[in-house]
Image (cartoon, rainbow, N blue to C red; front, side):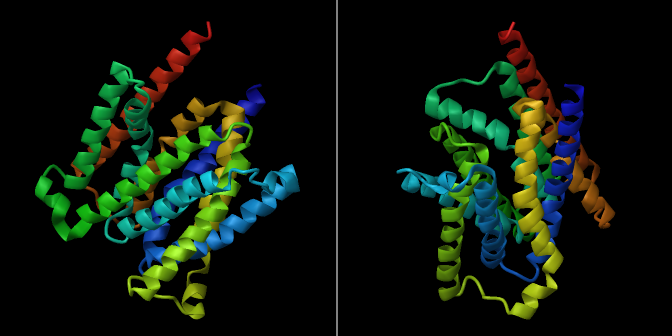
Length: 306
């Protein structure tokens, strides 16, 4: 048991490092590629790999939709197309640390979505943690001055990132509609139509002049960035996430996942970016609030099993 927990912690820490580096790497790639084409190339590589892995792990039968194609396509397009294009489009106008902090709010935002859709009111402690986390995000984005949020167009970018986070929340909630499907099968059978949606949207954006098809030589110059974003952040990290949940349980995996913004901020510091004290304090509030809520939920879960 201890060995499995140790493996789970190591696997999750690797996942945190990968996801923590996603936004700085994507920001660099977006200086050359637009959000549409970066997403198209990313999932053009990742989706077929998911299909190959699913075939290897669960067989050809697992690749069948069994009457669920339209439903899976809806969640795939909303989740993968909406998330990737919106987040990358927002990141091109914002900063990696903003993206990491906003994405960290997905869990508390999901609590509000459940409250609105199913009437399941979050506990008072969770609501306090959400309030503190939102305050922390406000501190990071505004640096204590609301006017600063609109400087350089970052506010619009942050709103796109937030909408991307909402898209992924809808996708995550949709997973419960597919009982009997493994996490790998749900990911694969939604990523395929999701990738198709990205290709269609990229084609439309290119025709309308909002995106520009890159030359092959241009793509080649971004070889390691594309490999990182497609192979590591999508395929390997998702597989590791599922493995970590198997070893540790969802709550423990999420607890370690809250460290993703810490990794992003550390990378930005190593890149030479100087953060103001209020930004670091805000990021600390977000991480501490999320960890506190996670520990509270773990306590409630343990108490309910007694």
